[in-house]
Length: 147
Image (spheres, rainbow, N blue to C red):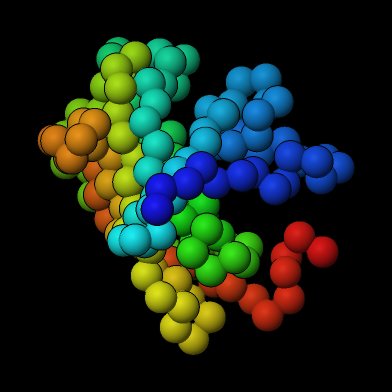
């Protein structure tokens, strides 16, 4: 079953995430969906030229931010816990365009010794050309970090 992931942090005082905060004045305003049948998380977006590195190319740091956020929301949807980025390893394979639809995609792994590994990619919508791919590991502490 595919479902929209609700951003449960929106009403937390001081919440102003650059990647997913709906009220961040210059943020990405990312929202995600999750497929319970195959443990995948995804979103489609078109990033403004404001976030370009070279003309027409999405800055690599912004690509990393999008993929880190993809792993966070996938981990949150599958394991119902918040965590912290433990490790992020990416390969930049092709120029990722701005102002064109791109898809952020993740395959969320199982919780193993407090770590969750998510295979991530930025690609053309529908599983086309891969711009960036890699692996993000999240650490899930015993206590919820939101408290």
